[in-house]
Length: 398
Image (cartoon, rainbow, N blue to C red):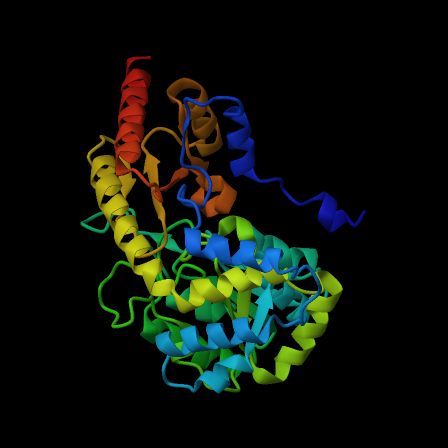
């Protein structure tokens, strides 16, 4: 076993979830997924595909029909380029995480320097580590006072200083899991221009692009690097069907990459998974073609959930929390409770409340807790806050 694999840290979110095994009374908000099932018409498309006997291999890069549907979808969000432009740059992957790993495999050699903006979903730091890279992290900063207290913001000067000609790859996730931080289009342009000057690749994890609540976007999406990039830029953008189409368990995603890299990534897919299953791809075609029946209503509901949860948490004494701009998480801390892993485990045992510890997303997030607010019933969020309030009151009495 390679030492780097042996040294990989197990998921602290799973560690907390294990505390609640066999406990139906626990309100579970620890994982990053909605508790709504995939819409019926998407499920039925997969069933129909199986009934037709589509149980064989597909093209490494994905069914042409799905790549075309993704290209049309991408063109709708980013109309500056043609549908054909996006088609030749699309690779279907077996989940967003598989796409991100493929990008690391395609770009990173052992010993390369990789810069990652943190806190972030731990896979984005672990994947270049697995490839043998030297990983440097650039932490977001927390606003400590004022109306934006609890917000996480980028120190652009620190990021640009960290990216040098020795930097092979920059990895950035925005809208961000867990903080909800989102890049502006101007910030994306600044980052991309700097990376052009240093010859650095950018891997943008934009799986939460559609889960955006700022209301300053004509297409209902967060700012994307695709809107400011040139065709020959060293840019790969990762997407997933999981969040915006309620398809977490389907394990299907896609990459948008330079046309010159598409064939090589197809070869990598052959050596990883060969291809995504045909029946899941058939379902995804319908998800793309009829996405307006799913995503806008989902985002509106998530905004209701956010606007239900965040004010209730902000009203609790000692809680620091800013309203997230995007994503599906409230990220907060409680004064006097610095050991977030211990707090998360105790909340499961003592309050029947399941949250993710901030330390799962990097040392700079120690002391914070992540609450996934993607709930069918916003009243579950209200119940969860009440359980947290009672627990916090009990701690003060001890």
